[in-house]
Length: 86
Length: 228
Image 1 (tube, chains in turn orange, green):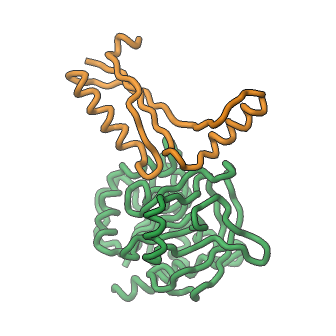
Image 2 (cartoon, each protein chain N blue to C red; image 1 turned 45 degrees about the vertical axis):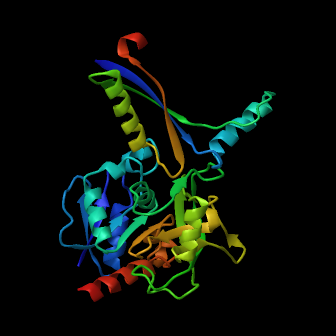
Image 3 (cartoon, each protein chain N blue to C red; image 1 turned 90 degrees about the vertical axis):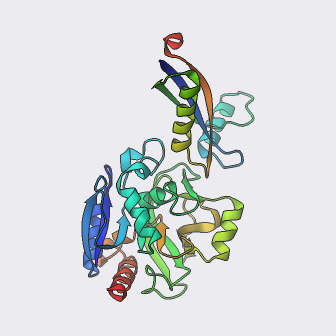
């Protein structure tokens, strides 16, 4: 079975995010009442797996390998059979 | 003994590093990152550049290269291992050094000379320097802000693992990227794995504007002679 996974990688809370600061500054300049902006990264991938549980395990293992635990946290945002996404 | 200079797709300081080593009397060979073996090499240099185009994060993908298992083996056996700029990022990503390198506070790719203070001269990379010596070396990076959590930082300071610190000198320099504790370079606890953001290989002859990088390669040469 094919699955579609969405992984979100973000800087840990409390670590200065200059990219977020820059975006925040621009948004404020545009007049939006924005308090704080953080910039993360989304990884979308298609996986082959026997079951949803196995797909989840693989997706989390990949996320764990790609994120840097010193400065980042990751979450599996979504996991669906591929045909539901297409 | 020969020094291995690891070449990843995107390394661009490999030849400069090889040249700087040879200029200081070391034998140095370029080793492609898919090579499985570092047998016969007495030290490893992970040069600067943009391994895998810095995709995902600087240094993040290089840690999966086959050669990294060998780099780890040598590091664990106590051989000198040096990571410069992207090489430093790779060594932290691979877990050979603590902490991480984040985007510069000002978000600018910064390419200029900075000043560093040598905090330790009892290492295989710094024996040719004087304690407290101020070096002028170039930096060229967008992700050089050293970060570690408080406990790790405390450990680094307690264990005298900060080797180079950015300083102001004659009204110039200072911390160029927002690194915690002005850290420009660190070693592991054992003292055989060094990571630094500035480029010593770009400061080894007068024509380059500074010769302050030479000491690092000369120190390494001494260390290798003692081993041999």
